[in-house]
Structures are given as structure tokens and as C-alpha cells.
Image (cartoon, rainbow, N blue to C red; front, side, top):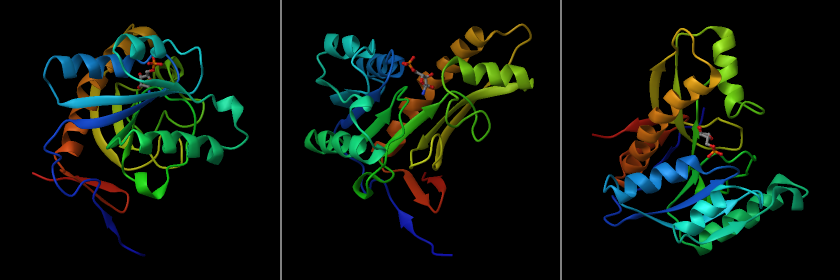
Length: 219
Ligand code: GRF
């Protein structure tokens, strides 16, 4: 089997990381990242937010935060490729270092120059409870229906498959007796608010090495 090694970053950035954020809904991960940035938890700039539909509540959030926001409506495009080409050309123009999928519900084709530069967060410990159609409360409903005792969240590099790609950070939370999808979602979201900045910080510090399908975190 061919072995290859790709470093998302060879050197620590030494400046605030430029994040391009893709949303399809409320932009709750974007809100949390802005909060952490404002609290001095990590150094980031947000040159561009892209929404996959014009009615995303997250667009207002971007506007209020003074972030340039564009709508690239999925339904205007016949194929994933055409949709992705426009998105990545905007991200290139905006000179982003890293793309953050933040409740982005569309499949995208990651071009070679963005390989291991697109992160996604999923509200479960993958690989179970993920994939096409498993998003939002549906994830937590599936977790509760299966009766697992531990859930959590996963930050991973995105490839061209839903909720796939090398895993960077996972955080676990307990599933409690009497949990509803909503109470579990809230607990998992608290973990997400820690995990996403952590993964971004590791990336900006050039501490992530991807070998085949695994991420190694350098000391
Ligand atoms: C988060 O829980 C995240 O895990 C998932 O989308 C959720 C945020 O979506 N990828 P939204 O901001 O509520 O639309």
C-alpha cells in the first residue's frame, strides 16, 4: 500500500489563523468560536462565512460580527463538483488557512490544495451515529435509541464522504438516565465548544500530522 504523509501546516503560523466558516443553519459553532476568540482563548480571524442557503440564521450572526458573508445556495448547482468549485474559489480569494464546517449539511468535494485543511465537527463519537441524514437531533435520537452510555463529539478533517476523514479530537460526555435528544445535544454542544478551538489551535501550531488515515499530534 502506498504510504504518504501530508502535513496540514509545516510551521506554526505565528499570526492569527484565517478561518473560512461554512454554515447551513444557526451557526452555533461559529458563535462559540467567536466567543472563544473574543475571550482570548485562541487567535483567529474570520474573513469569510459561506452559507448553503439564504435563510440561514447564522448569516445574521456573521453580519453582526462584521464578517463578510456569502450565500452559495446548493440548489442552484446540479453537481457537488460545481457547488464545491465556487465555494473553494471564494475561500482561496479570501486567503483562508483553514475551512471550518459548522453545521454545514452539504457534501463538498475538497480540492487537492485544501486536503487536510477542512475540518468538520460531528455531535457523536464517530464512526457510529454519522453519515448522510444523521445530523442535528437525529444523531442524539439514534444514540438514545441504541442505549449507549457515552456520547460526545468528533472533530475530523473532511474528505469527500459525509463525516469521514482523519479524526483530530474527540471528547466524550455521559448519556444520562432520562436524557432527551435536547438535553443530550446541549451536553454534547458544551464538549464541541472545547473540541473545535482545541483542534484549530493544534492546526495553527503545526502539531497535526496526517499519515494515511490517522492524525498524529506532535508534542
Ligand atoms: C453542531 O452541533 C455540530 O456538531 C453540527 O452542527 C451543529 C450546529 O449546527 N455539525 P447549527 O449551528 O445549529 O446549524
